Each structure stands twice: as C-alpha cells, then as structure tokens.
Image 1 (cartoon, rainbow, N blue to C red):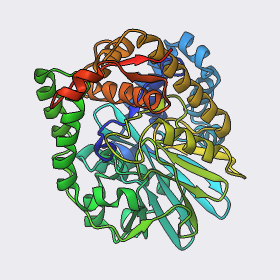
Image 2 (cartoon, one colour):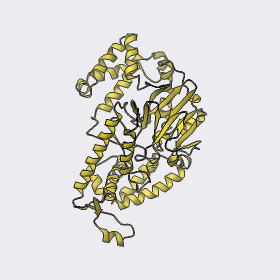
Image 3 (cartoon, one colour):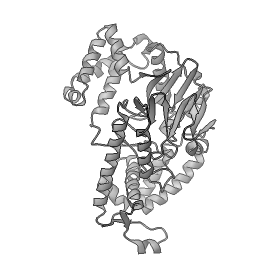
Image 4 (cartoon, rainbow, N blue to C red):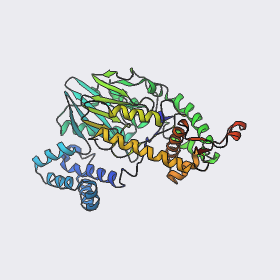
Length: 427
C-alpha cells in the first residue's frame, strides 16, 4: 500500500513546534529580497518578500524559541544592499530554500518544491563536472514543475552553476510515493534522464494503474477488519484514489539493489516507510528522503498492507543508517538539513517506542484498530484519516507480532467471513 501514499508523513508534535514550518516558509519568501528582481519577477515579487520580512519581525517570540532570531538579523543586513552580507547569508542559510552543500568531489543542491497543496518536498541536484543526477522529481502537478524550473534558475544565477533539466543523466527515485516520483512522466518529456529505483518499488512506477486498483481492494479489506464503518470506508476509498488518478506508469531503466551505485553514489535500502525506500550516499552526505527527517517522524503503515513495511523493518533501517561510517550531513526529503544523523534516529526510535506503550495502555480493554486510532489521534481531516489508521495499525501490528497484544474476540473471528478484529494487551 505504501507505494501510493500521497502525503507520507505523520507529525511528531513533541519534536515539531506548530509554527516552525510557518517560520521557514516566511524566511524562504523573505529571501526573495536577495534576488535580482528582474530575473525572477514571475515567481517572487519584492512586495511579497517585504511582507514576509515584516511578518517575521512580528514573531520575535517564535524566532527566539526556535533559535532563528540571529538569522533574521542577518537577513535584514543582507537585504540592505550589503553584497558581502548577502553572500555570507546565502552560503549559510540558502536562498528561497535553495541550499548548496559540498560533498567531496560533488556538490548537492537542495531544491524545495511544492508537490501538493501546502506540502513541500526537497529534491536534489547532484552535480559534478561531467555528471548531473537528480534525486526525486516531485509530483508532476503544475506548481511542482514550476518550482523545479525556478529553483534550477537560482542555482544558475546565484550559485553560478549551469544545471538545466534537460542535462540530467539520471533521476534516482528514493521511493514510490507520488510526491517523490509522480513527476517522472513530465521529466521524461523534457530530459533524457534515465530512471533508477529500488527493485521493490519498480513495479509501482511501471504498473501504477494495476497497483492503484489492487491496493484499493486490499486496503478496503484492511479498513473493514480494523473496524471502520461502511460509510467511512466509502469516503476513504474516494480520498485514496482521487489524489493519484493523474499519475501514469513510467518505464524504469535501472532496478537497484542494496549497495548498488549510480554515477558512483551508493544506494542504501532502508525499508519501513516504503518497501523500496533508499538513502543515497554522496561521499560524506546522505540523502535520507523520508527515512529520517529533521522535525517530524515519517509515516508508518502496517506490513499487512505491503511487505517490507511496518515498524520492525523501520527500526532495523534506522539502526542501519545510524551505523553508516563517515556521514557528516544528512539531507531529508522534507524540512531542514540534519546535522546529527545518529542522534535524530534515536529520537525517532524513542518516539515510536513511547507510542507503542501508549497503544499497550489503550488495549488494556479490547480495542479495534479504529478504536486505537480515535484514542491516539482524535478527529482527523481528509487524507489524515487514512494516515491515522495506518499509523495506529502499524503499531498494533508490531505489538501483536511481538506477542504483547492478542486477539480478544478469537471465536468471533473464527466464525465470521469478514470479521472486525479486537486486540487486548497480554498481561
């Protein structure tokens, strides 16, 4: 199922303050003041950048809490026509979200693009003198395509590096979620880039229409067994399918296995969040996609829906990247750079172990997965309803696999053709 999740993250409220995302978006907009307006008027107006800067000035409390007060001061100095200040600011913080990171004999450019409404992905241009590799290609919707062109124009004009969409040799897809690979059709129309993806996710790209039909059937059965009502199932089916109908199948030129290399960059298979998820190692920089993120915990789904998903696989994959030698910097598929990868993996693992204990406590009395979902997350809107059921289900599944939960209504499950399953903690 995970190969077609539209919004693949679940918020860790204990790690991410509510306004951090808003602050970062305001900084990115305000940084338009550092651009040559004549070259970017179609994408960033000075009026909008001035407004964003003023909004930041009014959020001093949030800036102090998040440690961004000094960044605002630097931006104000840089916007005051001090070119040296501007260059220093851009080198440290980037501009409009575009950041340059040295990685041995390569340079990695972070390119933030809006892939779905209010949902920003980081794709990456990995540049060497005779090699251009793209890591992910966005969703393919109109604004996603526009943002790719805009961020590449910043790479050329601000960072003085000639990178054009048509010059990419490869596009390495981190995993088969539509906000990361849905733009493959669009990319192939404007580039000769070959597509590489892990072998476990290749079928999603190559047979997406089949995947959508079969997964919709499987997930419907799962919801019913989780205790979701017929009326809610109908709503969830529509939500699940409607966000993916524009995606078309795309041939894959290279099916990766763990340890394979593309242009010398090594793929590390890290199943959990998605069966074929890979991190790509560019010398001492690790592109972590949705495996490890700076502020939120990546969404989890049960292995019952797709092999190589589930919390057990995810824990092993966290340990795998934590033990990779020589990683100086990690760059996620969303949010900011991760300066201490090992520490962040431990934070994420601790978060999930805490949630597992919450589920154990909730199941002191028998609960369906739908009941656990309601207790953990309350009322959710739109696609969040699907993500919440999957997240709760992943934790229930892990505890059941470990023998810490058992089926409470086993006789009923044995008799019924399509049973609703209840779980209870094992004392």
